Image (cartoon, rainbow, N blue to C red; front, side, top):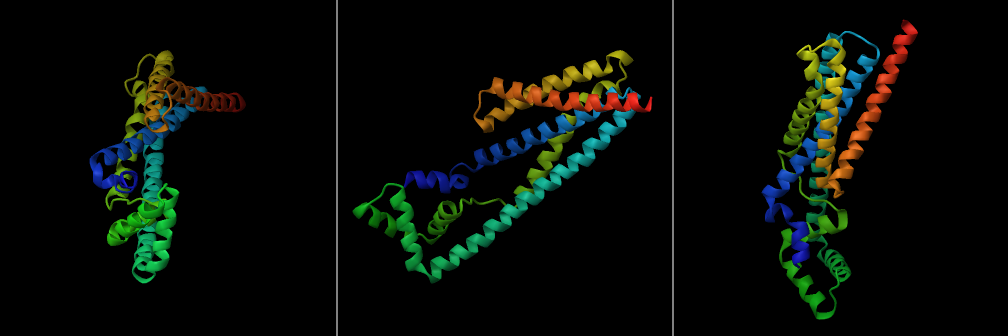
Length: 242
């Protein structure tokens, strides 16, 4: 029973911890995309040997256009998840109220797969059927794999994603705003981006459960590959148009 409670009622048992983890995940992946796309733009413009001001303008355009696009996608995806949960929960609630025998049979099947049998299975089934809310929660989790989505979650998640995208993406633009020596601008930006790539990748290990060093190095090389491709394209464009 404790196993079921831990999985089904995590929002009730540890709401603050789960909310923090969810928003941290939004922040990490927002920062990940903001850094990759913005530095790719910078690398492409640098490869074409365009004026540093072009990098600033295109960098900011990417920050807010792509950042808003990603935040909007996050909002719509989470809102859809919430709508699906509400619809399926309404169906389960109706079935529990109008088809109790069928739902009780499903409960027994679920509990038997958890290792309950005989008198224990019968007792557990009776206990679950006495608590209609828990009954519905159990069916939602075990039958559909769905957990509740907070009403404010879509908007807050989108805002967190946008904030992280803009902050992380802004970092490699900084040298071009403060106008260091022209020859060193892209080098300084590359160092900043490299450190950020590794840091964001290491943070991803919180969710992927991988060793932070490998996760950081993976992000470093993936981001570097994207930037190298963009730089190469910019260089070729410069060679073609002279």
